[in-house]
Image (cartoon, rainbow, N blue to C red; front, side, top):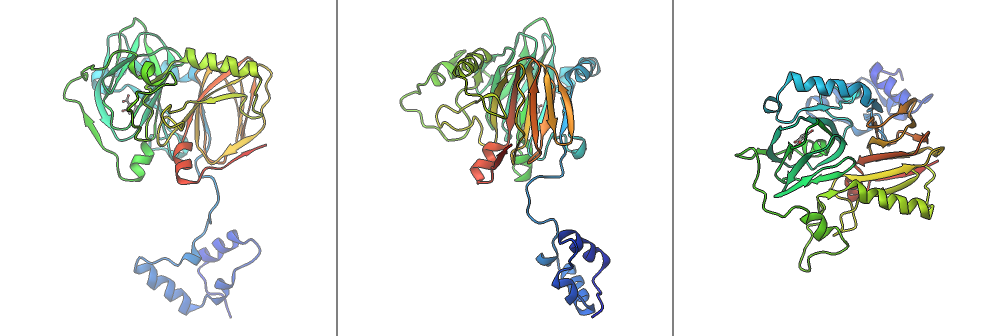
Length: 363
Ligand code: GTQ
């Protein structure tokens, strides 16, 4: 019988099964065509006509931002808008393949935030979880859930979902940090709530250092019950991370793709610091040439120290301190280090593991 399937259907079937038009197409006659049109008008779609079957990866492409090119724009932003106008003076790292979303990949947000001396970013809370990674400057703090957290270079700060948070710069230089949020998760589920605090700053009602001193020294308050969500440790200081990496390097446990790599843990569960995001710091010694790696997790990387290169999908980028890049799901990447390189990263691995989706491939 003459094929009467619409050209689009034939094309898509050809793509799905090159060189072979499936039996369904040969059954396609005018009755079939009328049937498809009729059910489509009833908001019914025949599953057997769906194309692009189940396979890992997304349409989102890798992207890289050099800090050298972004930094002047952050400083310009300080002239363009006051903190009051902007609330958060953030340049979102918006993936060119996701224009209009503000997102760096389908599951994550990344932004570089700059705060000038004397400025305050007013308190608010939202259902997305947030992290900060301090990139430049001294003297800023963030207040999270009643605790004031002074931040130093390389520190990683946790802002759990729905926790009040405000920032301030008490120093004399601009301070820049990377904001990482799981906003696309909240949007996906239609659960993105936001609330401003009635004043600029929230009351500080916990002693400075409480979250790390009480929860971050391999002990927990005897009656503490974790809700299994975000870490009770709100700041992971770089000096401790560096010491841990030093010891790991002495022990010589070098991963073929990642070098020496530690993940930040929620001490109450042993799992990730957020329900959605896994967070890591890795060190690759000078001369390291890493194996190719890919996983279903989308990862955002920020260079903390050193210079090297990353092969990221079809492109290759030089890496310098504070550059940011994103490896979308299932895109292969590999690193090489000219000097000792340290890379901070966060990914959607926690969420994927919780849902049973996460997979990886080394080499
Ligand atoms: O500092 O609270 O980059 O709420 C995006 C959303 C930063 C923040 C961002 C936020 C913040």
